[in-house]
Image 1 (cartoon, helix red, strand yellow):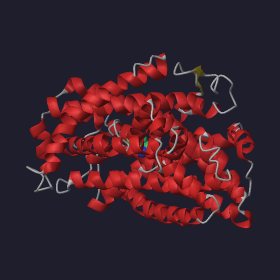
Image 2 (cartoon, rainbow, N blue to C red):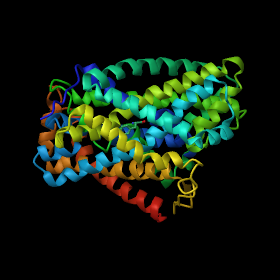
Image 3 (spheres, helix red, strand yellow):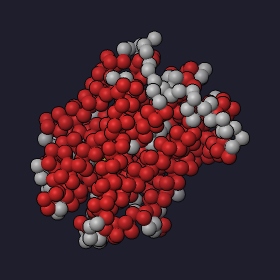
Length: 463
Ligand code: PFF
């Protein structure tokens, strides 16, 4: 059996898991989803999903991981339910798919550090010209993947935990600095109003489905990333309070990202908030233009922003790579270092069509497919993202919750959650966990999963 390793402390685990959760999903994804979803109304639905549904699923994932000390597929087998291993395998597949496109965006962010430092603030044109320079962008992506692989190859406490403990606090300090700056700009308050004052008429089925996908993606749930990290956690840790802290950290950082970006858009648009619905290009197109208006400090602010984005992305790519690597180490008995480089290489190759789909190859660009949901033209990267984030993750979360409560059984879950938490049994939290994991999550998530797939891929809208 190859050695697995483990976290050295409670703080190390929380930093690593929060590092997994906090990533491009918070700083790149959340603001653009808020922008497209009509502002504060999306935020309200999103918060509901995070705290009411996702938090119990998170505690459950960590408990399954800690109980079994296994990767997501091996965990179901270790509990004695071999025919549930497909849920774990589906999660590992989602991890491979997510990392394949995630690394492309992380590679752009990496490249944008240099673009900003050189004072290139050309917005859409610059972004279009950047993404088609395939050798350059490919090299940035390869470097990012290699950095991820390097951290993962150093193991759980020496690599993953150390990187997270250093990068997470730095990220928070840098972001707070940017928020203070944004708030001093003209029309900042128009941005804040768009972001924080909800207009409930904007909530529709599409907003609900995207908020659900975003919540799962942002919290790294539904694919067993937290089963994997849970497998390195000590029996004395309090899982429920750790899950609460991780959820709060993730939601908190997404919130801060919004506080940083919407005032900037308010400033840029002269208060009209035009450009807020910029889609995935939002931070690569709109933000650089904004940095360009800042005069001599523009390059510095821009460079800091993208350094920060890379920090956030790295602790997430590390957790994404760790999932298939843990599988290779546990189940295929491959040495960690070797597993890391092989898996990273494969995932980089899987990501190549996503890399090509921003203008270089017409086939993989927006002509790749058209959703039936009203005809959104979609590139390969966004297509893979919606399969993984909006479909597989909620399905995985639903299955994990159902499994824990009804197959593995509630009392076993309770037993694991109570280890390290003497007051858990008989508490309100326990009652809520039982209700949420046993009924709320399986029912709501299975319905939303079916509705999302019908709507997005088949154009059938039931509600
Ligand atoms: N939570 C990460 C983000 O918000 O950027 C992305 C992610 C990491 C998703 C790890 C899933 C995962 F297992």
